[in-house]
Length: 302
Ligand code: NAD
Image (cartoon, rainbow, N blue to C red):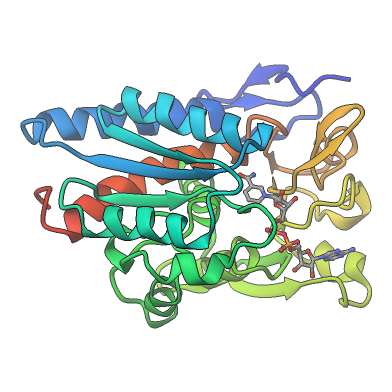
């Protein structure tokens, strides 16, 4: 069937045929990119530069990186792409990342993951200074997040938070269930939802969670960050809940999320389309992080 909205609500948000507000990530990405561009112009257009490092010729990785550069240009940012062959070797990759780390004209560094087999990704990450870590993946960035210090937070969890904020989904005192506990998505997102000021009561569910349906049915905010097609059914969803699909599975039928969209949109109050929900928000927040990095480095006015 279709993920297309049937109508709009009084705030201009589109609704699905079942009546849920569609949390349109493409629209919000375009808004955020335009806001970033306006912020940069208003500051006198200082150079803000994102550098990506792409090792090997994985098709999806190439497309992700290309898209990041397209959107960076729209945000009025400079971007650099260091492309290395799959057999470049650990030392060469580390040399490139170290040079970007030392370059005062580069504010954000993103090493496209996964690196080809045989590379030590942790060793590469360790070379990225926390203030340039626009993926929020280094130990220093994770530590800052836990301790509530200024720093950079992973783009996908930040994108989920922006979707909730922009659609005015209440979080204070509400129950949130995040399915998935990775350092990339589930764990940082759980910390963000529980932060002072956001104030949700958060449960982290995972592959060993017993009675997942029971756990999820209490959630006012339910996030799937697993990568298992259709894991979240209507039975998992409390009527009116906000349901956010982060999972991406490539199937013969195309890209499929963790949420059974057709069934869930008839029960949920808010739902992200897949594709067109969390994916575009990840890129928007990468660019938001690049501007934050420039600020942390003192290269952009607060
Ligand atoms: P991961 O494999 O590191 O983690 C998956 C998590 O799911 C694990 O914590 C595991 O405990 C949990 N899990 C596995 N099976 C489960 C089950 N049956 N019930 C409950 N929990 C289960 O993956 P990741 O890096 O966190 O990514 C998660 C998904 O999000 C993937 O599909 C990935 O492609 C996608 N992703 C999407 C974006 C985006 O922009 N939308 C960005 C990053 C990752």
